[in-house]
Structure formats: C-alpha cells, structure tokens
Image (tube, rainbow, N blue to C red; front, side, top):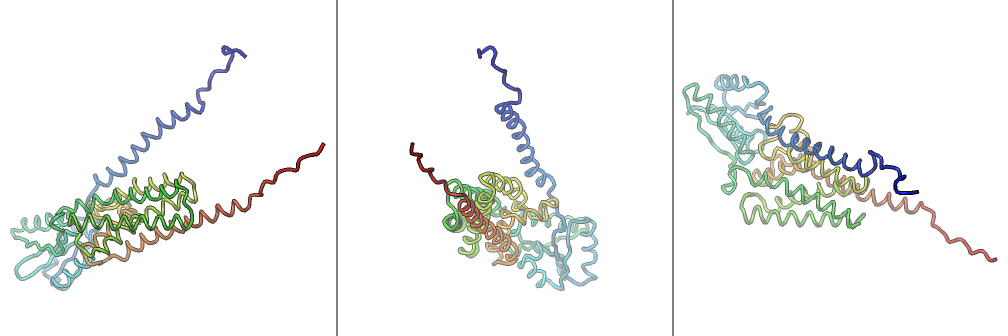
Length: 340
C-alpha cells in the first residue's frame, strides 16, 4: 500500500487524547488548588470560637450579651473566677477569657495557641470597652516565643513535613521496598526527620520551647502519618496511590490545617476536615507539646497514630496480597521436546 493511500490518523488518536487530557486536567488542578487555598483564606472568621467569661452572673451579663450579638462567632464558657479561666486557657479549653474584676474587665489570651485569634479577641473586647468608655487590661497567659511572635515558623513547618512524608512514601514505593522492609524504612526516615526538625526549630531557631523529645516525636509522627499513608495507598492501588494521597495531603490537608489561624477560624467543614488529616492534627499537636505542656494533645495524637497504623497496615497487607497472587500463578513448565 502506498503512502498516499494510508489511512489518515483519527482526530481522537491516543496522542490527541493525551493533549486534550493535559489541556483539561492542568486548568482543573489549578482551579482546585486555588479553591482549596483561597477559599479558607477569604472566609477566615470566628465560628464557635471557644471563649471564657469569668465573674459573677450579674457582672458578666452585659459582656455575654454583647458577645452574643456576633451570632455564631463565639462559644461561651462560664467560669467562677480568674483562676478557673486562666486554667482553662492553659489547658486549651478556650482561646481566651474575659474576666470581670473589681479593677475592671481583663482579657486573658494565649498568643501561643494562635496569634491571629489573640489579636482578634483584643480587637473585639477592647473595641467594645472603648465604646463604653472603659479600658481592658490584656494578659497573655501563654505567650508565643519571642523568636516567633506571629507563629509564622510553626505555620511554615506544615508544608515541609507534608512533603517529607510524601517523599518517604513515594521513595519506598518506587524503590520496590515491601512489607517489613518498607515499614522499617518509613519509621526510620520519619524518626530522622523528627530529630532534624526539632534540632532546627527548637535548638537553633528557638521557635519551639517545649520538651525537645516530645517535639521531635510529634514532628516524626506527623511525617510517618503521611509517609505510611502514601506507601500504604500505593501498596494497594499501585503507583496511582501516590498521587491520590499527595493530592489529599497537599490540596486539603495543608490549606485546611488551620495552622495559620485556628480550625475554628476556617469555614465549615474545612476546619473539621483539616483536623482529621495529618497536617492539621500535626500542627495542633505541635502547639500542645511545644507551648502547653501537652494539654489537649490526646485527640490529635490519636489521629496521627491511626493514620500511621493504618498506612503501615496497608503496606503489610499489600505485600501479603502480592505474595498470594504470585503463589497462585501456576509455574510455567517447559514442554518436553518431541523426538522425531
């Protein structure tokens, strides 16, 4: 057959379909990324933010009434006196507390929990007091470290830890490690990341001020939760599992973590979803161990542990299933040669 009579390539041939896929998928991913990162940032506002009010019912009635005007903004917790309110702030039950004393109103904050929330509370409470012709005394009960007063370093740690976890899970998969060897590699890499990150953030930069080993364990567990999930998903789904988990962690876990402000400052259900994913749970746990002596650490620690355990379990399960499939395949035996 001559070249002139050869059939023309179909407009929907495989190369054409690949071009169409790239043209469509890239803008779609860009739109998803912009939505995931821009939507929470554009809708940042308090939503049922835990706030304490301390004092006698008669003295605090006016303050509670003014706070309730901001419908849905605050979740009011009532305390008998300043000591109880201060303990609630230190235990991370509330982000701050308005205390009515004989000297006048006092605002207890915890900039270590969230500098953004502490500033928001100051503006809200002092603005109301100024409108009434009074002044509010500000007390930062748990202050952010002097080396990182705006919490920028802790917020910046979310992405590198996520990338480290994704890289560990992808490396284990692409290098062909399976079963126990894969699990040991993931645990070892995560432990080393935790030690190195704690050395940088605590020993060198001074942006973390808690127990050094607890911080290293938190940073390592955060990395392991992501790495094990990536490797486990890949063990069950193939290399496509790497992309699926990377998408979940980067496009949802990172922007929904609430590390830059607080989970209660994000639009729902972003704040709740973020705390179910490793980046959000990891940043919350890191604040607890670094600044609050481990207060309110149980929930995020369990979340990270479950991610790590399920991911490692998936790695082991994927290896077992592959061995079973290989064992079920009949061995090919050479046919005997025919003698003529």
